[in-house]
Length: 96
Image 1 (spheres, rainbow, N blue to C red):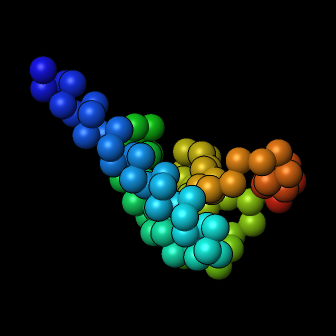
Image 2 (cartoon, rainbow, N blue to C red):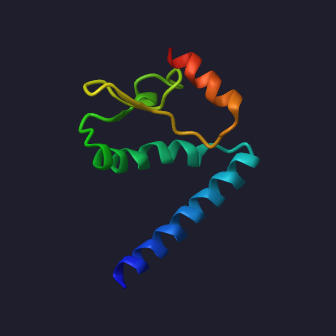
């Protein structure tokens, strides 16, 4: 029963995050997106065992193509609220 409670709570939290991001983005407010970059670091570090994962936008504002990176393990993440094909192509082009 505890697993079901955790899953329900996780679903509620993720649903709130999605709604907040969608509403903020429609208002051209991106502060929540920037906060989520940092919020995802400990989660991704734990899931993928990336002890050196950092927010690259802290090194250079609007780091080209990616947001989070682990230079030691050569892994990178793009944290975005946009899922359209043009965004994906632009990100890949910048990353190359």
